[in-house]
Image 1 (tube, rainbow, N blue to C red):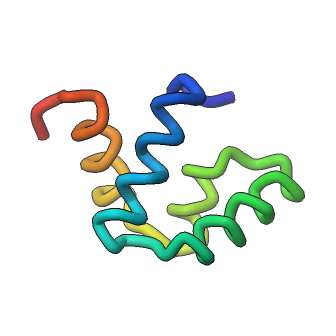
Image 2: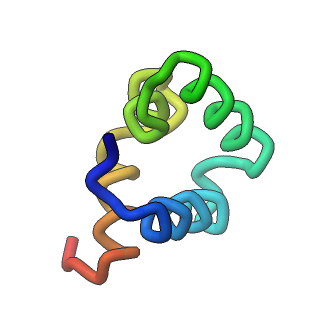
Length: 68
């Protein structure tokens, strides 16, 4: 279960790619892995080492207009 709306999650995913933290290809691969493992995407991003928790948190905050 995600605490973000589908729209907000999509915005975060776009920001991660735009900011160069992930490539679109890598993001798609990880989305497929998350689905096959029945795991939330953002959890997989951090646990796989593709992204630090810090970078993910910062991107989520920026998309939601929360100071970070």
